[in-house]
Amino acid sequence: MTLKTLLSAAAFLAVAGSASAQTTLTVATVNNPDMVVMQKYSSKFEEKTGIKLKWLVLEENVLRQRVTTDISTKGGQFDVVTIGMYETPIWGKAGWLVPFDDTPDTYNIKDVLPSVRDGLSYEGKLYSLPFYAESTMTFYRTDLFKKAGLTMPDKPSWDQIAEFAAKLDDKANGTYGLCIRGQPGWGENMAIVGLMGNAWGGQLFDMKWKPGYNSDAWKEAVKFYVDVGNKYGPPGMVGNGFNENLALFSSGHCGMWIDATVAAGFLYDPKRSQVSDKVGFAQAPVEKWNKGNGWLWAWALGIPTSSQKSKEAKEFIEWATSPDYIKMIGESEGWVTAPPGTRQSTYDNPAYQKAAPFAKPTLDAITAADPINGTKDPKPYAGITFATIPEMQAIGNFTGQQVAAALTGKATVEQALDQAAANAERTLKQAGYYK
Image 1 (cartoon, helix red, strand yellow):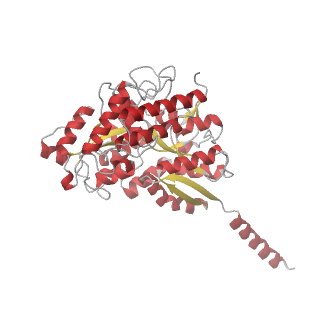
Image 2: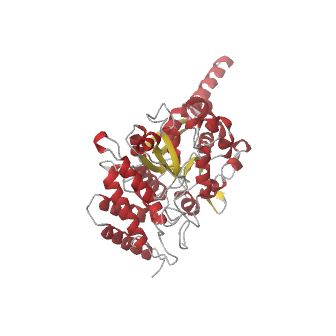
Image 3: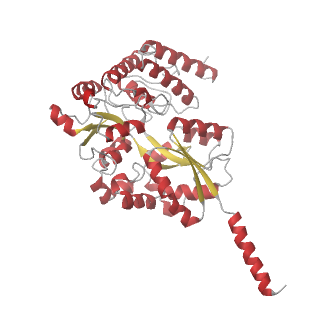
């Protein structure tokens, strides 16, 4: 065999070996708009690195169920998972996530807001990196408020929200006074109902871990939620989560909407919102208690320890959560839609400040959200609308179903919350929290 033949054969084998060794990452993510944008731009990462991405994009409740099952059984289906401030510290403690303890200097981890870093850590070690972070905000239609002669205060009460909703509600013309989440789930309807429980002076559990769902505070809050939802909400509210309400408000069907601050970027974007020039915002409502009215959450990207491709997965996550990614989206899609809530540099950027009138209030809400001291009475858990304990997902999902039953008239509020409290107490007893 000639030298030329040998070299040709070696070159062929090298190319073949390279092709066969190409890495494909399986990414499980939620179907929120920011993640859809991430998927759209991921081809740039593929071109840059040669790493291929296989996407599984799911509705929030389904994503949580699939990812929780896979990671707890070490199934190894996913290399990158979209998780949040509830799962990250619990799964990090359990050894189910790869830590991010070696991010490069160019990533600038200190630029990530401290409250967000803390929420995605266990014992000082990061176990996921934030794609976007959020608190809660009241959105409203400035044109409808002006027409009705109403003025939204900077920090409204829930009673005021109900009064406004009554005057804005115009179902005959397809405008609903108030849009809020009704879809059952610990991260769906229980996100907003949890804030309301706090606002009426309640809490999830007392210092002895006794459930607070059937307290007077929670009963008042949920009665209010059911009443205003049925009077002034859209039909089929029980099926509406974040995405459904975003679609309703951005198409002009909501007088008010109380939900995640991340929605602001889409509501103010004329390419995606029919009411972009008619949106006002205020803080999330309070009532008998003036704290705990805004959640603290981040959708973040983590790596299951069952993945065989953690090196490549880290490379992708660091790309998708980097300052360069935020800059790319700001310059390509418009700064109003840049992923919010994660980095101080985003809020220091004049281009973002100019495009996003909601920037400072969003940052203020995220900074003010206090997972430790948000309730009227002391509590034994960290969290605002959830407790950071392994049992919370099951407890919250069950409670969400009971609240949905009350909303649709299948149970009274008292029946629903008594069932929720009994289930929570049974679950915590079995887990050894008390006898």
